[in-house]
Amino acid sequence: MARDPEPGGAFVFDLVDDGAADPAAPLAPPAAAAVDDPDGERPDADGAVPGEPSAGSGRMLRGAAPVAAVLAIVLGTGLAMDGVRDAARSERMRDVHGGVVDVSAPLTETWAWEGAVGSRIAVEEGLGIEVAVLGDVLAFESGAELVALSAATGAEAWTVPLGADPDCGPTGSTGWGQVTTSALVCLGGPETDRAVTVIGPDGVVSAQRVLSAADTRRFGEPRPGPGGTVVRAERTGRVPTSGLGDGECTELGECTGTVRAGQDLTVRAEDAVTGAERWRVTIPFRPTPADQCANWYGTSWDGSGTAVNLNSMLDPGGFGARVTDRLVQLYGCGVEAVITADGVLLGTEIEPGTGSVESLRSGGYTSYTYSEDVRTVLYDSAGTVVGEIDGYAAEPSAVDGSGPDTLLGVGEPGAKVTAYEADGTPRWDAEVTTDAQSFLAQAAGTAVVLTGGGTVRGLDLASGEERWAWNGTAPDEYGADLYVSRSFTDGQFVLLVVENGYGSAGLVSLDAVSGEMAWEQHGEDAALGGAGQVGGSGLLAIDGNILEVTPDGVRGLG
Image (cartoon, rainbow, N blue to C red; front, top):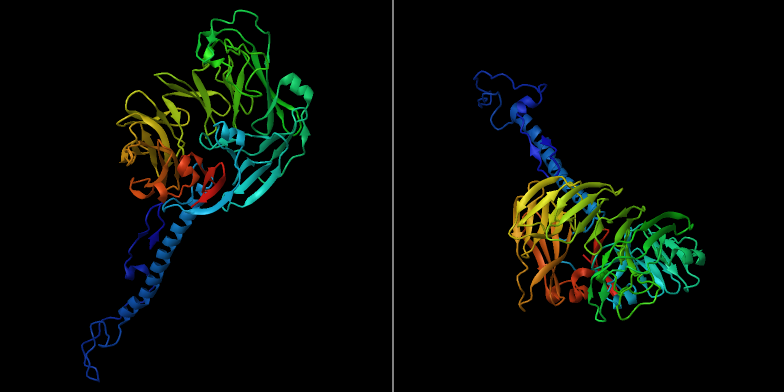
C-alpha cells in the first residue's frame, strides 16, 4: 500500500505478502494422492491438472488486477497531488512580494497597453515613474485620468477622471520601491479650491470633499497621506532672530558649518473622507549640518514660504517629505524624522542627515545610521524597540511565502553575512568571499544573496551553509560591469535582472536549490522592451504577473 508523503516528498509503497493479506481467503486444497487421471494426465502437487489454473494461481491472478488498479490509482494520485501542490504554490506566489507564477521558461510579451504612465513632471525631474498596486491592479496617473490595469490581462479595470493639477498617493517609484496600498487619495482643483477623493481597489470613488482654506492657513498645505488620510505640515514655534550658528552655503551649493536654531515642524493627518483629525505630531528642531538646510527643496511642502538669502542659500524653514503606504518620511532643516501611518514618531535619536527609518513588510520598522560600524534598530508594528543587529537589516526582494521571516545583516564588517529572526535573534553566521550587499530572494529553503564582488550565492536558509555560487556578472563583451538590480521568484526558480552601466538589461533564471541556470536572455533576445533599454528597474510583480512599466506604456511578461 502507499503512504502519503510529507509535502514535497515521494510516495512510499509497502509490499504485503499475498497470503497474509486476507486471513479469510480460502486455503489451497491439500496435496492429492499421486493417482493417474482417467484421461491419462497426472495432477500436480496442488491437485491441479497441467494446463489448468490452480486454486493458488487463481488467487494470484485475481489479486493482480486490483493491485495493478491500486498502483495506477496511487501513481495517478501522486501526479494529481503534484498538480495540486503546483497549483497551491502558484496561488501562494500571487500574494507574496516579488512572487511570480512561473519563471522556469523564457519570458515573452503577453499583453501591452500604450499611453502615458505617471506624472510627466515627476518623470522629467528624474523622480521615476510613480505607480501604486491596489489589489490585483496597477494604478497610475495618465493625463487627466487615474487608470487601473489588470495585471493578468492589461485590460483597463477602471478609470477615474482627475481635477486640475492632480496629486495622487501614496505611490512609489518603480526604480526605488513598490507601494501596495488599500486606497489612493487624490487631490485636485485650483490652489484656492482643492478637493479630495479616495479611490479603492475596485475603482469606487468616495464623495468629493472640498478642503478647508482655513485648515490650510492653520495647518499647512495638504498632501495625500497613508491609510486614507490627507497630511499637512507647517513650521511652528518661535522664529529665531539670532544664534543660527555658523552654517553657510555658497552660490554653488557648497555648505559648511551647522544651523543651530530654527522652528519645529507640526504634522497633522486628517481623514480624507470626513476631515476629522486622526493624529498630530510635532517634531522638535535639532541642530543640523548646513547641507540639510540648503534651499534645494522644490514646491509646496518642499520649501518654506520665507524669502531666501541667495548669498547664503540657506533656508532654515525648508523641509520636504516622502509619503509611502506606511510612513511619512520627513527631511529638511532640523526635522529629519519619520511618522508612521498611526502617528508614531520614530528616528528622533538619529542626528539629522546621518541615517534613516524604513518600514519592513513583516510589519515592523528599522532605523540605522550611516557609519563604518553600522547598527540597525528593529521596531515592531507599534514602534516599540525589539532588537538590534549588526549591519543594515535587509529583507528579501522576493519570497515564496514559506519558511520563517528572515532578515540578513548586510554591510557588516568583514566577509560574512548573518541571518536573524524578525526580532533580531541571530540564526546563523556564514562566511562569504566579500561582504553581502543585498538579499535577493528567499525561496525553496535558500537565501539568495548578492555579494560585493558581484557573485550570487545560495545559502541554506536553516544553517547558512553555501549550496551554490553563480558569477554571471563578469564584464560583458563591451567591458561594462554587470550587476543584479532586481529579483523575482516562483518558489522554485529565481529570476535575476542583470544590468550594465549603459542601461541595458538582461534576464537570468536560476534553480533556487541547485543554482543551475534554467535560461537567460540578453540584448535583443531579452523580453525587455523599454525597461531593457533604460534599465530593468521598471519591472514589477503583481498578482503573480511580471509587468514592465515605462513612461509610454505597460507590458505583461510571462
